[in-house]
Length: 345
Image (cartoon, rainbow, N blue to C red; front, side, top):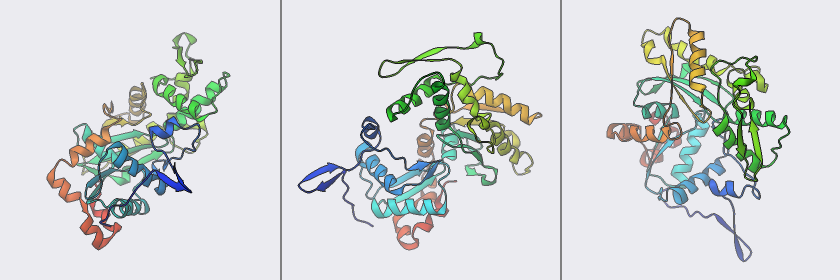
């Protein structure tokens, strides 16, 4: 600690050097000849060696900053706040990158702050996890958190299955990425879903693959997204629906005398799977469940960058910066376990 670590993408083999790994867009572009790995699974950091390489890429190639003697603000994935993960991240950043200080922020808090609020409910639809949480005056109410193990990745898989039934084929990693793009651009939620809706209501659209193949999408555009309201469609029989986890989350507040329930009746919807129509459908389903209470759902206008925006706002305050900063000096004395009293959650 306290000394720069020499990093390199290259490894020497006999008399020449070869590129050991690629990160981000470079890896995607070369996916045909590479084995792709993902250090985060179900919002949990699993591969710390890969994470270390990602951090190196972010610091030196993407941001082009030297982390040595710098303060790092880290907005972790939603389910990555276990003791094992937090302490390992501290070790990597302080021991390997020799940072000056660390601030860890819960993404739900950062997302809420990006919209100018300090109290409210956040519903996050990620790659493979849906997560509902209440926040009161910038503090996460942990007992109210509800989650389900499905997200955008399941939407892509289900869409793939439906299209394969029509004769389309998606077998390569390149086609998988194109299918993700298709889902982002074409998928939507019907406000009122009924199996008997007429064919005249279908909006058939075409998506052109890189090789020129044209894929026609009709009911697949909305059938796959029903998984958020009926998880049994993808075999997740024990998982609650999205309206259920959101309703269970906010209902934890209704009986509490310490909180104003009205502050939590406005839900912020964010995440990659917050596709068109999701806001209105979730709002409709929640009002059916809550009955006497009117609930409004608002779509996060900055959902692709809200973590960065919210974290920037939080750390722009000198008081909060000093209050939540875990310094390298403190790390030297107490070790990675000292991070717990500095987490913004």
